[in-house]
Image (tube, rainbow, N blue to C red; front, side, top):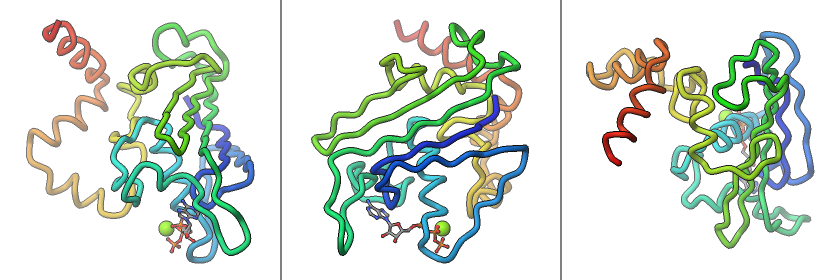
Length: 183
Ligand code: ATP
Ligand code: MG
């Protein structure tokens, strides 16, 4: 699956609806300090199910909602949608046959958080499931940020195993086995 579009509204500094197209295999995000480059990466992690505010450089999860500026009022909700090209049919389960897969997360100030896959209301787990074994989860290795290379190099064997299982595509099965065992 290839990420082809990111649509944001009310997320961090992206208060107005913003559509970022990601054509081709390699995309660079450049701009002056504080213009919102890292916010785009935060948006990716957030949609993929990140539940730790600190991993998104905030104190509480509501910190991802645009909280106002000199001349703009804060807004009531943040939403981010990722559109994936699935023409190779790599998405798991019921989504295999869709040419495009849209994953959306919406958060309101009262804490109400919802996830959607192709506009169907789903659980957070449905979103994390779709990416298991693809390397693109909130904690997987497809998003490599500052300090991550050294974390991998210095990882303990059991931490390293998580990356290897994801790369080998077995994490999906490990998760399912754990679920069955816990039933
Ligand atoms: P650098 O080059 O320094 O890494 P950057 O382009 O990565 O900068 P970001 O960290 O993505 O910049 O963006 C920081 C900006 O986002 C700051 O101006 C900050 O005020 C703004 N910002 C973050 N969260 C919110 C929010 N909830 N509401 C409004 N603005 C926000
Ligand atoms: Mg940055």
